[in-house]
Amino acid sequence: MTNPIRILFIEDDIEDYRFIESIFAAIPRGSYHLDWVSTYDEALAQIRQKQHDLYLVDYLLGGQSDGLQLIRDAFPNGCDRAVILLTAHGAKEIDETALQLGVAEYFDKVHIRAPLLERAVRYAINSKRVEAELRDSEARYRMLIEAAPDYICQLDTDQRIQQINPSVIRESGYQSAEIIGKPLREFLTPLSQSVLDEMFPRLLATGHCRQEIEFRRKDGSVQVMDCSGSILKDREKVSAVVILRDITRRKQAEHALELALGREKELNELKSRFVSMVSHEFRSPLAAIRLWSEMLRTFRHKMDDTAIDSKLASIMSQIDHLAILVNDVLSLSRMETGQVELKPTTADLDVFCQQIAEETADRYRQTHHLVCDLPTSRIPARIDTTLMRQVMVNLLENAFKYSPQGGTVRLSVALNGDGAIVSVSDSGIGIPESDQRFLFDPFYRATNVGAVTGTGLGLAIVKQAVELHGGRIEVESQIGAGSTFRLRLPVVPSD
Image 1: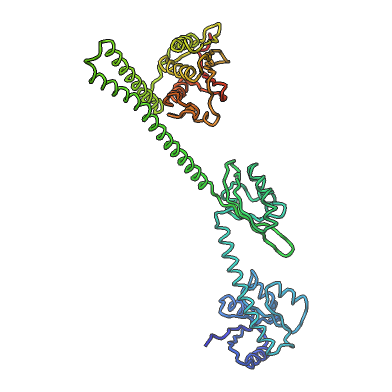
Image 2: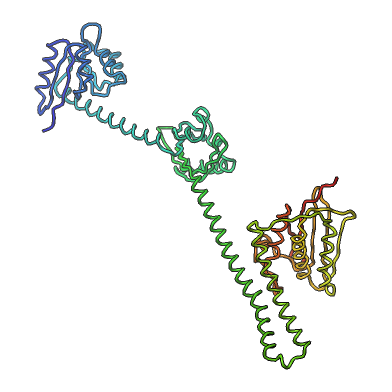
């Protein structure tokens, strides 16, 4: 059996109480418990205990207080329990005031009938129950929105911000007055402003959208946001609800992963190039050494001293080649790990470069031409002569090696502001544009080198050595038109 509905009747006239009591007694299947108080103070005390489901309040309570004043005092924030107001003096202003206070129903005692009163009681209790559920639901949703870490913004159709949740204030650094009424695009980076301008009409047309944008905090820092939007329709008014979720850390992690994957790919390619270089550059000299060693062991007794010396010289040449290769690998490794100590001395850069160019050109004098463009005055520079010799030999050897017979290699040394420019140009095969960005990577060789031998270490060593001197290296090249490698180096300031 269900509990009876508890009703408190607040009435100063006992005859009226008995009349109402008789009505409830006559209600079929009624399950009501009627309590009665006759004074304002008793009624206020009972209401504050909240032990009843409904209050029947007479408008005239006697004394200086009436039923409306009791309702105001008992429910200062509006009625949260079902209240029915009774009066013998029907007046429109009383009715309107009662409804404003949250009274569920208003009756003239003369017109009360059992069916009407029963229905009013049930409707009033149910109405307050529904109101309470709505308030609870609204409170839960408000709590969720206020606790949400996402930025939640309500925009009008002009992209102006109408409402925001507390997270916007907590995280962005702006105050509410700095945001409300402003277009959302004002808080985005220029690129994201264009994204929003394209996205917002689509949101209004389709009712939903999702896009990544960049939100600028008050301190200037940028948050990458996953922006999702939906349409909110309130009668004739249309607005957009935009939720911005901070994915900055996720994007940073993705970027770091991409870099790691790229680096792993580079290392795998480096490993492949290293294996390819070793298999070719080591195997060929070792094969030659083995061949000549076998010839000496097998046919030495048939050779004269000249033939023996020739074979030994060939063996020593291949050993020297292997030693140079190993030294190049070790030199590059020491440079990349910071184990090379620069030992600079003051030298005339133009004279130093010319001397190395002429020494290198001697080996190609029968097949190539060397042209030197030098300044009329000396260019003193602080250089490690051992490293800088390695730089110039590598560049000049490449220039001669990749130029056709009869081709010209040009060396140029000149002052340029507070630095010097050393250029080595050839008239060779040129370097494909797609290869140029990898040209200074260890073991990398251009895709058009053909049968020209090389390890792919020379330019990597050149770059490291030049940067140790505080300089940089540049390359310009066109297929079939040759290449120019340009060093920009600091010089000794003039007095």
